[in-house]
Amino acid sequence: DGLQAPGRCARPPLLQRIPVLGAMQRHLGDVTSERGVFRWIARQVQRMAWVVLVACVVALVVLASPARNLHLLSSTTELLPADSAQRTYLTVLEENYSAVTQQDATMVIAATGERVTDFINEQVAAVDGVQEVLRVATAGDYTVVYLELSGDPTSRAAEDAVASIRALPAPADTWTTGQAASQLDFRQSLLASLPWVGTFIVLATFVLLFLMTGSLLVPLKALLINLLSLAASVGALTWVFQEGHLTGLLGFAPIGGVEAYVVVTAVGVGFGLAMDYEVFLLGRIKEYWDAGADNDTAVAKGLQRSGRIVTFAALIMVVVFLGFVSGELLIVKEVGLALAIVVALDATVVRMLLVPATMTLLGRWNWWAPTPLQRLHDRYAQVGVLTGEPAPSGPESPGPTEPEATAAATE
Image 1 (cartoon, helix red, strand yellow):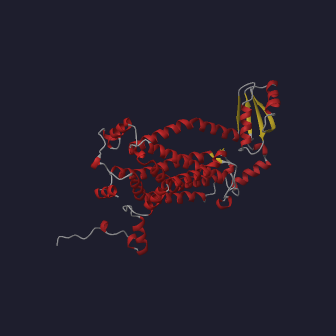
Image 2 (cartoon, helix red, strand yellow):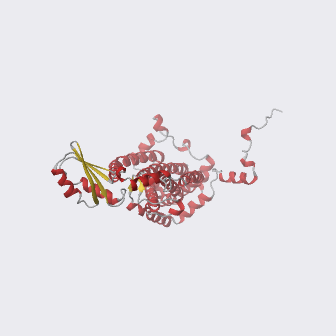
Image 3 (cartoon, one colour):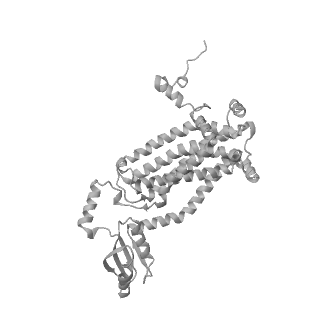
């Protein structure tokens, strides 16, 4: 009869043929509907945009406030579980064989003699935070001084003592080492390169979002919101691991700070994930705007069409990152919780609330750019970046189908 049996690709997937799971999969996996819970959320936010904006900003600022006292660490044995064999060995070694353990600080002076001895006894020993000069030794033309500092080697007091020692008018070149010195050097190196790295990331992100949206304000808004979200995540991390909250639930002992590597990782990876979700959402919103929908409709439909994908992607990542929290190493716990908080805040507070609220308040200004930048966007955006040809406009622009565009324009 000329008819062919339907291929395997035309059959419903096995999961959809299971009664309950099939219904859930069809409902949760459907991203074509323009009406649903995410559009409803967007409409509620648009009705009280100022209230939502202020409430979200206040909440994020409160979450970020502990970060004012953030203390970056470069820990060693403190990261091991308290009941591990390695930690027990190092503890016994430190308590019973102090001669072979590392001192709080070691100072090397490129000179010897009475002038160096006077400098050690009169100035180094008098520094606030130097508890005791343990011993002094010479090695050729160098003098080595072993110091015991007040508090833990990772504490702020130890770092301040190292900074004060380095600021002394020494009789010769000096070098100060130890855990506090390593932390101090790492933080100074990080802060020294931060402006260059931050400027590059901000400029690159702004250019890419501008080429995608043709707007000057949307990239700026995205950067500000994401920076606020990252600050809130770092604040929450500080509240948990530095201030020692939720220790019983997470199973750790606080050590007075947060590992510097964790903060760098959380901020870097978190910013990338946040901008990834931003592109998903803005891409959908821009499609409806280009198709002729008004700003509020474009925002509501864009959130509806992208919200499910963003939410489930974020949920998967949060579950994976929370799995790291069950690890025994403290640094693994910190990384897992930090990234879980970053993704959770971004997928809920930022994408579902802050973005619709700010875009509603800005209205048509969302899509404004000075005339020279508009010409630049028309010339280089979309395919023009790759081919040198002007970007398509009007009916040929990528966007919703014709029925979708008609419905968006007449809503």
